[in-house]
Length: 251
Image (cartoon, rainbow, N blue to C red; front, side, top):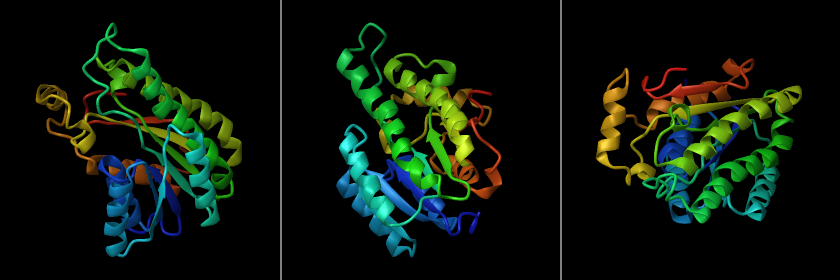
């Protein structure tokens, strides 16, 4: 897929580690210049430096999804640097949200997850739309989760937030289509990354044993789908949700 995104500028949230770092590397290898956004300053600096040293066109912006002012400031800086052809809404609050059932969930946890995962993704998209509308074929890719497809237990706030983002993808596709912007989502399964280190090994095995492709899932398994949805190959694809989970959930 080298060269598929040549000349494109792609913004990725939650890009300092895990899925976001993998997306950033893959998108850069496909020829795009990449804007890495994250709240983790040290890790963001490390990822940016690593990709720059590898010869890729990469820049960084601190961004806190829970703070509207931070989102506005980040996109003002991004706009000053040029146009934007694509956005991956990857950042989300996952670590620490598991292990509580319906009755144990508290309002503070619920509100925090919804603020970051739902409101934050909406505000980032809102900030990106004027830039994406100027591109020939702007693209938004929302990273959701297959937990919202099979109803994973003891993850209520997280599952609800990802279900909301799936629904938002469809509504955004309708609204932004007249501006030439395609909006799609990818639903990964449980992936071996830093953010899932807290997940009990038993739950990892549940996924791995239940997949049609019976193995662990890694960030690189999702990269190709993201590049496809950002590329000209997907110029007539919008409003879709693609599970990438090794066949744990069929769609």
